[in-house]
Length: 215
Length: 215
DNA sequence: CGAATGCCGGGAAAATTTCACGACGTTGCA
DNA sequence: TGCAACGTCGTGAAATTTTCCCGGCATTCG
Image 1: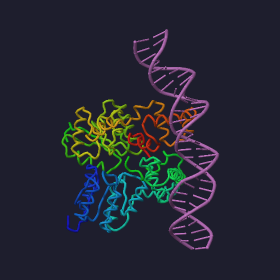
Image 2: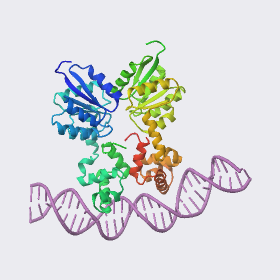
Image 3: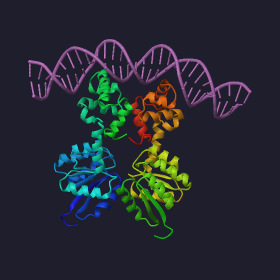
Image 4: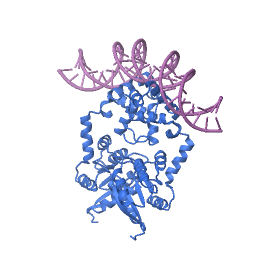
């Protein structure tokens, strides 16, 4: 409990889970949990008031999602250290999180040691990724499954987003001020680029890649 | 720690989460955690060897899912008391779990008191459901969203399952030994019955209703 | 200045979705 | 028993969507 302890902000909407983090981290000397938040807004607010050395945060939360919180915090403080700790064993989420400015990504299936290791690594300035996600990323390279964010042009990506949001072709056309025909063409092109044959596969690919969070 | 303590088996694939349960439950007199499992197989095996008074279990786990574990345990021991404790704030999952034989359904967003309350209720022979799920269930009645399991005939449900499993119309036709035309007709009828206009909406409805667990 | 790429949409063929209809067997009930 | 209701399967034809090929336009880059 010395003044030199690294201060930590815990963010998770499940109180029992925060209890778990806390229990694991307490056993480590040099770490001190100074605040907890149950949603994104609160996390952002607490970051500004507490200025912790490290944020450990879940991705799926009520209100604004984890990725967005990462962005906001990093915008407020370019040096913020944020470690994502989540259930999603999903390379797509990890890529998004790191790109948004997170410094680590650890899955909840990992043993406590992995979390502790990652906390120390991030505090030491390293980027920490749990082994299962490293493996996932390797697999996704090998399997050649196209990453939507990579192979699609901005316009195509936008259409995909709107499609997944349960809009009809006509609604999307109106939103984008183009002809329904163009949307249909893009829809077809998107499926082609992503290598899926049906809309059902398209949704499932989007789920795997973390493009679809809330149902 | 008296011999009369109620014995508990914890099942969750996230070790840090188990740590959280444990921490909360330890504070309650009369409860004793006697075993922990990280997946369904292990849970079933431990239930048989330990015969705990109560199982607290997550739904999403590697290998066999929580619902299936409930079924197996209840088949082995008709009086088994199983409390589902999960992140899914989803009435569909709750209905499935209770129908499979679970005695309670509590979401992880619930405060620790709710979990403790539910544990006691289930041990007392009651059915425990957390308030948010009660509310969800009420809403689903009001909104009139059709429950796939209710409005679909067995055959239709089977086709839906196969569609969601990323089969093409032809593959399904072959599997069921009917003409592709019939599958197409059923596909159309299913969307009609469930009140969705596109396959994308169909998948999302299936997700909400817990018909699609793994991606 | 080409060449490549993204964006927009028309036209037409191909495929699918939808609707109307009939047949058959089973169930349930009066 | 009879018969009405329902689930299942399939056909055919119309309506719609998907897909493919095309051209035009703007921007970027070497």
